[in-house]
Length: 304
Image 1: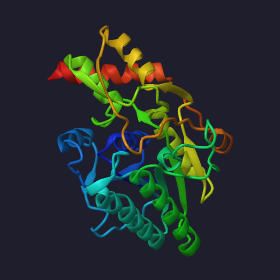
Image 2: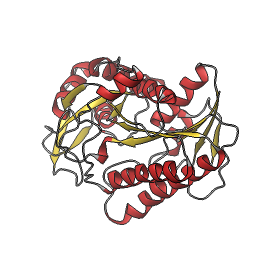
Image 3: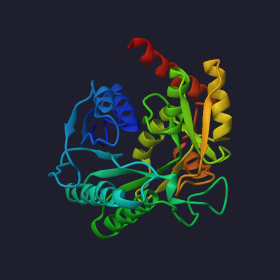
Image 4: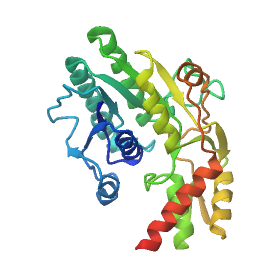
């Protein structure tokens, strides 16, 4: 089969593209290599992939002849208030609208990567898909807006689209701005870690290989489906710091600061629906995944 992966030079996108190629599929990646973090990191992620440098918000898009577009490209991060908000609108809402428009025109299915950020402070934990969304950050708002756009294109233009709400991905190649990457870098370099809030905020963490397998499984789902993708293990940030300190054999120098605006206090996915309908379930525990991410990061440091 022939697939497009947007955001193919990113954390999850590069893993997905590699997995699809390893399964014998033809994969074309799309990425615009924004400077949100060092583009050299993305170049390293994409070094063995066929990745086109395209801006989804303005460049022509042609998906004819492909079986599916995995739309993972986005401007990430909940710290999306203030002057950066127009960038989130452009990279998340406008870019997604153009992907949906082109896919509907060319008759291609879309698997759209949304986020647990659409829920905000949910009414229930673990959180099922029917929970009314109430995002707390502009990032979450733009992801929810894109979900509404997907449904609009499905209803009006027959777009085949499946939406996946990822919960707190981690593992090798995790973005350098994310908490586990920053903690590991600080432990490896003997530096300090800036903690936003008291560290008792908890997350349902999901290993990247499990996210990839759920994303591929969505090829077999009914159009219009919405699924949570979560790893099943909830832990506080302080608990994950202890796990990483044990791997490092040293204590982390933590500097506590105020909570980040828009950050959720708790996330945890109810994955009943994806388990029942697609037979998917996570396989990698938090401890196993943290060890894999630690060893990958330590190996990169040793190779420098």
